[in-house]
Image 1 (tube, one colour):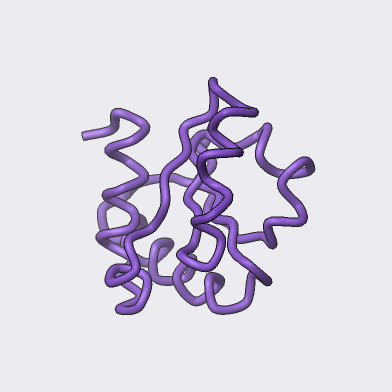
Image 2: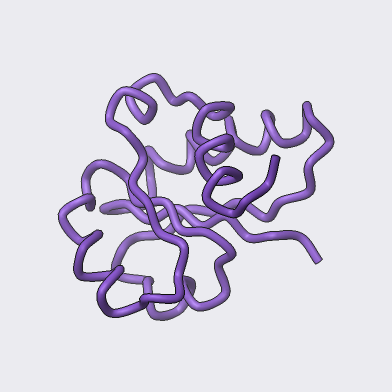
Length: 102
C-alpha cells in the first residue's frame, strides 16, 4: 500500500500546485506515494490516514497544537522558501526524511 503524504494549508489551492510538483518528483524516482492537499478545516477527515503531514506556511501557527493533540502523527511544516519556490523535489525529500525513507 502506498504511503500517504498529506499537505494542509489555508484553502488547498496554491498547495495543489506543490502537490503536482511532488507527484512529478516521486514519479521521476519511481516512488509510489499518494499525495494530496486539503484545507486545515479538513484535518479530522484526512489526518488520521496520513503517513506524514506537511503544513503549509499559512497554517504553520497550528503545528504545536496539532502535534500536542496527535503525538503519534508525523507532522512538520514546509519551509517558506521551499513553498515559495514550489520545490516539489525538496518537499518530497522533507516528507521522506520524516517517514524514515532513504
